[in-house]
Length: 102
Image (cartoon, rainbow, N blue to C red; front, side, top):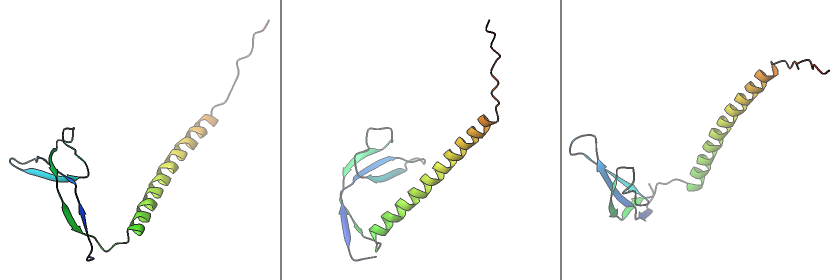
């Protein structure tokens, strides 16, 4: 850990846990109370955390590279599906009905 710290002011929330009397607490950057999340907003709090000794630029690049890989995988699945549909259509033979003009 580095000696640097960061102070944030997120919103503290609480909701009942699965066990009787249990309370689950969570921090969010905005007020999540009153919605379908089940959390009640207890107010804004000040939290000071040590900054990890991590290069944020490298971490962001790594995140984007993972997103590229996931997008590429999803695209390849979609292209495979489309190619399969084309293949099925190409197996069909077009036979126009004879015209009965006359």
